[in-house]
Amino acid sequence: MIWWLELSLFGLLVVAALIALSVRDMIAAVATLSVYSFLAATLLALMGAVDVALTEAALGAGVTGVLLVGAVSVVDRRTPD
Amino acid sequence: MNDRYDSVILHFVVRVVMIPLIIVFGIYVLLHGELSPGGGFQAGAIVAAALLLVRLALGNRQAALRIPQGLLIWLACIGLGIYMFGGILPLILGANFLDYAPIPVEWYNQFAGEHRTPRSMGIFIIEFGVFFGVAAVLVLIYDLIAGSSRQ
Image (cartoon, rainbow over all chains, first blue to last red; front, side, top):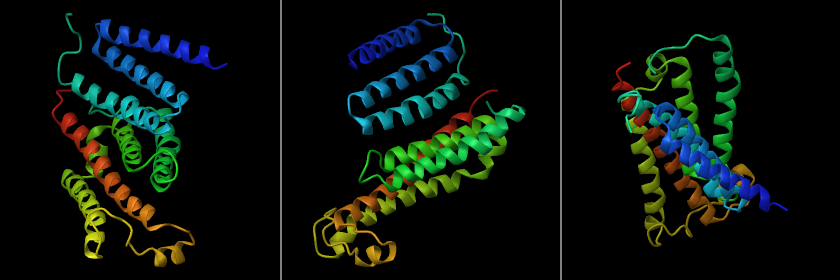
């Protein structure tokens, strides 16, 4: 019953990763990376690894996004490639 | 990211709704860490996320001054010290390093009205150490990055 939910979440995960790799604006890339981490946390919680999902949601979607925004404010915001 | 963004809705939501909820959830995750999913690392990351949210919303120059960097370094070292204490305490009581079996828990069970085993008490001590270390180091990393930004 839940397989279509996992499959659609996994599809969104791949789409978010591709967007985070291909977008030019660094802030948008950081935001998409946070979306990727949150989808990964949801998938891990669905698969029963609640401990790993809690870590991924707190660190990957929360703290890492803030630290990467701080790093983007040090370098240039737009990237040529 | 150092400047303050003046918005009544943002400040109300961050100060009144988000910060108390996140910190209470972090303490819940810390105190139930050895029984349910969670633990010191996750609780430290959640509380550090709350402190970073204060810095992002209320302006880094005002919010970061509430906790000076020396205190953050001291907190991280105290966390490491609590971890070492949890490891050395069984060594003093006659067991191996990090072997929680001889830790006395009767006084704590009488005080708190729980039925905690010595091993869960040892994990509890170590989770407190990990909590202080992780929260202090994550906030310290953000303060150092924000202090070196141009804007």
